[in-house]
Length: 475
Image (cartoon, rainbow, N blue to C red; front, side, top):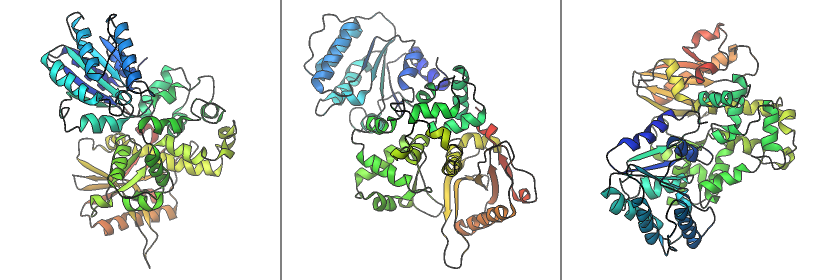
């Protein structure tokens, strides 16, 4: 059963109603549900569907392509010499199909595009020279290697430039969508447990679909991550190797960012990761941003060269924190460690990341969904004679001349968060440092993001607005 993705389903189904041929690219990270979405949206009714071989040269790819055409009705299809031949034969197969829109689904296109195969040029020719001369083709391409889709198709400056009629990037599920998925599977988790599961898995539907409704949260995490040959015990390596053909530079950047909670500038990444400054690094950073593994932001008064890159992928952060050391790989690790000090520290950081991933829900609670807003992080570096430094992961700089400095605090248990006198002074000092550093003329509001709300004591009087976990679960 397909949960969520209502907008994406509507956009795909609408392609069957147009009076022209359509060319759509669907892309996103591994396990995000691209293939399932496409199949469900079109009712598994394809004139031709084919998936590239993960490991296979051009000859193997062409043979598999020819074999699939035979299964789809072109039984006398001869052996294919090259991709020009393959797409020519595909045209012949489609001409044999009944009238009406015919959906062609090419899954994992990056795997079809082997070295010096000419696949991309012939895909270009097939669309421009054949499909666009008709009104009845829906060509859907898909791939986990988001960088390939972006570089080779979306940002292509050759024959495919501006040829896509639709592009759909599948983002991770929100808390609301994960809650829907949990309920659909008959899993009994409360919102706190769903939140903690989200801190670990992020919003990747496939990971959530692996949960066993007969197990508690800690048991599920141990079974999936820490049990020998658990379904997600080796997912980290598969994730990056499936997304990127040459994952080494990506993993170096990810490893460097994992060591710095607040992120690094490009120059800092070069030093920490020990990689050269080049155009390739620019592409690596852009691809990681596109895949939602990292975010990039600039502080007011700084240029794009001073952008800060911050690791925000929940699954990656969890793996780095708890699975990189073999000493942690005992099968009941999470059940025994979930109340430990390292886990409590991680929970605080992970909740900050979840808040970043639910910016739209925060804006809705603040009543500013329709207000143009610039979102960024901010940090104040302490200088001689100055107070302590300060860091804010989420600043909402609004066009209505109000800035929300969002302070994210996580506490286990059902009680409200209590702002101590010291924490209250720190919040006020943080606001003053922000005003001083940025020179803003806007009103600066302090916004608390907590699980159960904030106790209304004396320190609470300095807070202008609150967001709770229930607010983050809104659709």
